[in-house]
Image 1 (cartoon, rainbow, N blue to C red):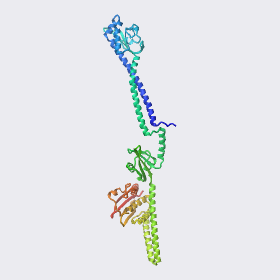
Image 2: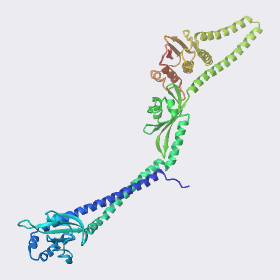
Image 3: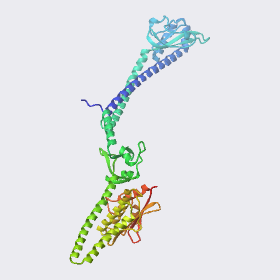
Image 4: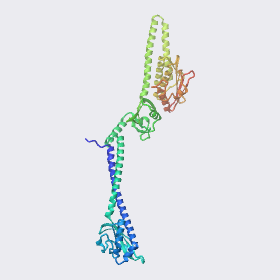
Length: 517
């Protein structure tokens, strides 16, 4: 099956056809205009010659002589040859010819209109006479004394002579026409070559089919897609991309600052977390190239909000499980110790050891459960306490902690408290013992106050100012999302967050979350 013509080839053929028609029409118009101009010039010429002869004194004298033809013949013929006209006829008022290029017609009546000339006017006409079609003029000859009309002068140029002059101009017109056609064809060819490169030689049906397929795919994929040209203008956002970025259909693509900043970075990005409103998105960025030229940037977005939240909860549960496993191991050791002491007959000491361990564990549980009425948060605190113990960190719940009901979304509170505790545990990881982390969760004045303090190395003023920004971390690449999630939750509730140095060193992070009405 023959391949259909590409758009570039079709456009070239159409342009050549249109240009050829336009040049042909222009050429015909130019020829017609040249013909009209030639006829106008011929009329002006024969009239000027006729009027000059009619005003010649020698012509008036000859017309009053006994034999006008003999006196006029040589003068008129010389004038005709000099002016390049085809005939000059001097006649009597009764049309009798005194001169004519054809000797046999001298003395014969003039063929043509003379009535206007006999009334003193000028006759201009195209007439078929003895020499064929001609453009002629007839003017009166007046007596120098009384002004009476004593004769007539007719001067003409045959249309064959006019056409001959016009045909002599055709090579120049043809050359100009050919040059114009060649230039237009060359310009059309250049344009078609450029269009061929831009359309990759595809035909209209192929481009239509490609557009339909690509459009269907772009709007069907479950990943957000943002395409930006090399000038930074957004050229495409699919449906999922608009949903993830919070843009409505038809709304100008004003990208959030986080996404715009990621696109502007001159580096490849793979699965980098980006906080957009209440969503945690994973973004991948890459430049698109064709034939070595940068065409723009493609950014893919995936929604990891739920996954991040579930991952955080899973980490808490995993930490609690590991802590319970470690405590079970320690409990087994203590149980063996107690049994051995009983076998040795040291019953009182065995009872004292067992009850002391139970009292310590129960005291922490009672403190957390009594202070925090949110079950998920209470479980998180117990798990983090056990996790801290395994790391050699003393985690204490401030005695002023009070949260009797679930005033906020449980997941949001877990996100804030869990990330702040994790951040504090990592901050004191390299600190010499004793390593301490304190937690305060309290409802007051219509808001929930969360404060986590540690005795780690602390942060400089510049580090404190940048701590809540996306990707910032003292631990290197791959970190820096925890405090960003805290900032995201605080901003969503319209709350505040700050970080400052503690009185005994380390850092104190305070988050205030207004309780929704």
